[in-house]
Length: 89
Image (cartoon, rainbow, N blue to C red; front, side):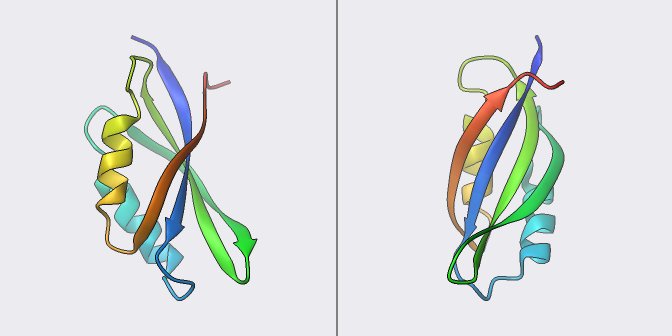
């Protein structure tokens, strides 16, 4: 089984959400079989920033579903959206 890199956009519930704390909670929520790779903050609008998180997952069908479910349960997360999936370089 190969690995793919999935870029996931995580929107916080509020502009006041501490993104560093949210990032640490996201790292702790990574399910078995997936691996946290990197993250960055991306300005969206009106002071709101999203976390763009890259995780490595198996290249099986539905490989990001468990990650999406785990991230959506983290306190402070408004929404979770996979924006890109591809082979790592």
